[in-house]
Length: 470
Ligand code: C2E
Ligand code: CA
Ligand code: CA
Image (cartoon, rainbow, N blue to C red):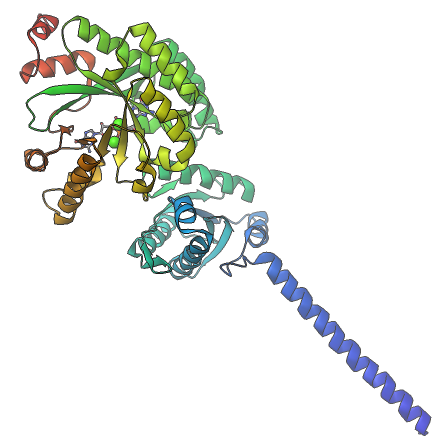
């Protein structure tokens, strides 16, 4: 071999080695880019694209994966009140809980914001998915979350969709898990499996919505009235109207059976209008007959917009009802979802002289922040604290603090879900202004509500006349 040939061979070898190294580098770079494109930089979990690439082949092969969709409750408040860095901190901790609790066979991804998806490739049964979902929520509630040094309570809601019965593409599964998640959040069930009947986009949901239009025209909707009594139980102060649907084939439907569907469409405004008008007509009729009470009507979060003012105005005018005797109950969640919008609407209603109650108080997360500067009159303590008031010293402490706080803020306090004499006595001792619950009466049809008031001796003489002969 000549020197020239040796040199040439060396050059070829070096070039080859360099080329191989370059290819390896390019491959590595591609792998990194590939991973980066499929990884959520904040939590290190897979992202939406990763979920697609995992799920689509499974679905194409006819697999039956299950999808859990988790959305944190009240996470917006963490961002709003503690800042985005704190929010990020919490998301990283939540990702850790998900990794630890979702199970070995599950792949956890973050879809964006505070939304996480867990894909279980081959669930043994639907029950297995529910168990996994509950394990995740239990992991969250064990807590130990913090943003910087601030300890935080993080809760979430999970919707479950299963390939096959609930959808055939990842898009369908995500959409249906989202519907179930929303229903779980609204009903505070924690975990819910997708149910076509309560999905406004499904055939069952669409059918229900179509029927609701006629239901309102044909008086299939009915209001039941639950009394509110004074703290000592001696006086009837008012009624709360609660809607039911006497469905022609499905029997008497409770709000939970149809409100979640209605609230996702503009029909909710028609429902709010129907309830408000019907309740005030009833109250006005009672008043004419001598029964003087206030009337409370629930307003869904989605109805709490400027359009509500017109609806209220119309109902007041048609029934000549005194706005001071109308209470609109809005949930704490409604305020949390849109603090500025809620505040503006509440302020206008207040100017008009209508009373405002914050319903389910204590059920949300950062209530006090939003309550500040919101011109409300009443606070209804969520029934979860009232239910075991007597047996759980912690609930007793919370309720007595809430009553004291509300009074300091000049608000009337109502306890809902009073089921026992012991709870009623304790609430009276704590200075609670108004009580409501099965212990006094369940929500009753109008005639029975008056009969109840009469039997309890909580009425004026003219009510005796009203109910005479029944
Ligand atoms: P809410 O406003 O918190 O109403 C109280 C619910 O608790 C009612 O359920 C009532 O029947 C129940 N309840 C009352 N006392 C007790 C008790 O002592 N123990 C227990 N365990 N439960 C008690 P309901 O009628 O099924 O209504 C559920 C929810 O549906 C209401 O919660 C309210 O948020 C919504 N809702 C009801 N009617 C309407 C309406 O006309 N419009 C709107 N937007 N929402 C409504
Ligand atoms: Ca209420
Ligand atoms: Ca309530």
